[in-house]
Length: 131
Image 1 (cartoon, rainbow, N blue to C red):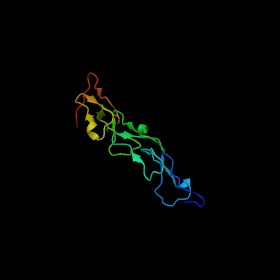
Image 2: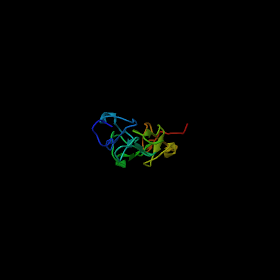
Image 3: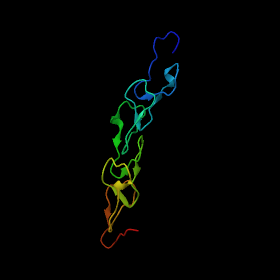
């Protein structure tokens, strides 16, 4: 406690501190992207759940946790970015939390990029096969 103070002050919402006996607000750190804190005086932030991500630092509630989009998935909690389905695979659901949401394109279709949500059909006179 700082001399002359009658009570300790907590870090603001959206921030945290693991230090004890800190003397000023500079000991508080913003919650990282992928996490938030709703109250004051918090010693750790709450991670966004698996299948979601958050880009914002210093978030004060879980509304920053957004579902991973179709074509991606989020394994683990506290992510600032979701992983993309690999070429040849597409993801058709949102909020996926593992690679099982990435489905292989069927014979006669393809996905050349990563993070796609639909397979393209081979044109007449062309073919596609699974390797």
